[in-house]
Image 1: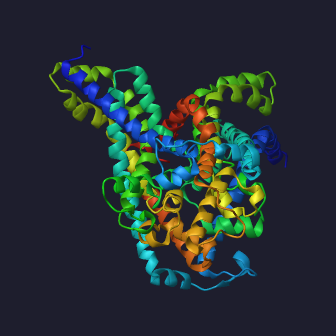
Image 2: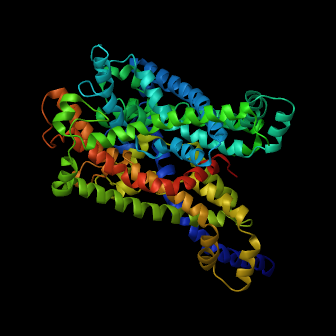
Image 3: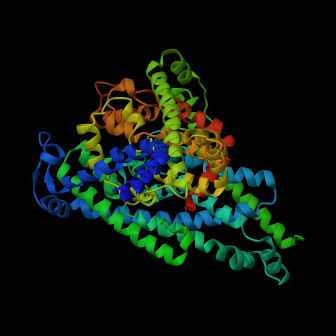
Amino acid sequence: MSKNSKPLRLRAQRFKGYLPLYLMMLPAFVYLLINNYWPMSGLVLAFKKYTVQGGIWGSQWVGLRNFQFLFRNNETAVMVRNTLCYNLAFMVINVIVGVFLAILITEIGNKTLRKLAQSSVLLPFVVSIIIVSYMVRAFLDADTGLLNSLIVAWGGKKTSWYDTPGPWPFILTLVNTWKGAGYGCILYISTIMGIDPSLYEVAHLSGASKLQSIRYVTLPYLKPTIITMVLLNMGRIFNSDFGLFFQVPQNSGMIMDVTQTIDTFVYRGLIVQPNIGMTAAASFLQSCIGFALVLAFNAITRKVSRDDALF
Amino acid sequence: MVKSKQDKRFELFASIVMILVMAVIIFPFVLLFVSSITDENTLLINGYSIFPKKLSLDAYKYIWNSGSVIMRAYATTVCITLVGTICHVAIVALVAYPLSLRNLPGKRVFNFLILFTILFHGGLVPTYMIYTTVLHIKDTYLALLVPNLLFSSFNAIIVRTYLRTNVPSELYESAKIDGASEFRIFREIVLPLGKPIFVTIAVFAGLNYWNDWTNGLYYISDSSKYSIQQLLNVMVKNIQYLTQYGRAPANGAIPSIGLRMAIAFIAMLPILIMYPFLTKYFEKGITLGSVKG
């Protein structure tokens, strides 16, 4: 008896010492329980026929019916195509533009201009997407937009941009680049700043031109950062930027074919025209495929560079 | 290093291209502001322009004199941002400090529980259902404050790593020998030494609260509880209604273009004013976000 009670008491004392620390962590874990873990249990909705009376847990099980509806729906292929293609395009363009701008910014000789350029590229990042949609409207409005004014001034005809699907892949990519390229650019700048200047001197002394030293010194140094960014983004390829696809096209039905993504579909199916079963199924697949992809790409990241992996 | 002629040419090229890029970045901001001070008739006839024929401050006068809805939404955003940011930083700091200690029992489990929320998310449907049908936060201020914004697992990991690498554990040990309680150690060692990282996450949390419109979209339909971003969102919706049905929706008048642009401008004004002072924190946060521990 006495043999056992001693370590027990010790353990109790030890726990008492840590109690304040556990108390400190309590708010965060209560929050995660409410905001993250509890909703995870609601994923069962994908296999149920939701009714208001039944709620999440009381509604009737329907097996895979919701998924059958989802896969028979014509919109499904379109929104998956849009989500994947836009994300791939954004990823490639943001890397190219980000690296290009980062190299230019670090090459600027005038320190004031360099600082100004560096803070300018990040400025669109801090603006809400709603305000961005107001700015876009100022360009694209059919009657008063700047673009149509220019077209008319050049002798062309006004176009109703919000009803014309054709240019939207280009418009959305442009807006995304304007708003998002600065983020990666800042990362690349900080990587370039970390390169040992003597490397450039060696390149210079051995007769390398400016472009050659970028090609053989800067780019190889940026490679790990670029790979990490790409891998992290690949893990999120089924998640679209809801704000960009919902706010910027201003919910216009005529262009839905090129603006609908999984996230706008889920929002519309949850709140605008409720179809809870099918929406829950789409949301369920998005979460699960996303999870699998994050794990897979994290495993790849670990192989490429251990330090940049998420875990 | 001596700069060659070629280097100088490249520097000049870089400067010129970046000046053009900066113009492209700034132009939409200028267009937004100028249209907010353009006379409404001029705008309707000539369209948006950087050099309008006639200027007018009517939109701002209207906001100042009779924009009680706008002012209310603005005050809501300011309050939610202040309260939310303080709570966010407090919750993150309080969980990050214990996790940064080497010998906390159960640390692996806690770390996993935090990391898992970054990897896997229930998605919008169940989250919406829990918040509306179980917790009933619809049309309360809690709806603007709590969902997704009050805590960030990502920030917790960043702060934990910062504290682990920047605060020497001898400090904690000697404070303990002096008889300091954990809460006192938190207040007198962790808070001051972690200040740079706390300010950084505060800047990001504040930006997220200020710019958030999704919580309002999902959970708020009572117009007296609109945030400024949601007010902007609702105005767009009313215009869509107008173009679709040829009349204004029953519950909302359509403000003029100038007024809409003026509201958008004052909605981003505080961020624009603070931006030059906060740039370094944004940059720091972005580079920190890419190197986790």
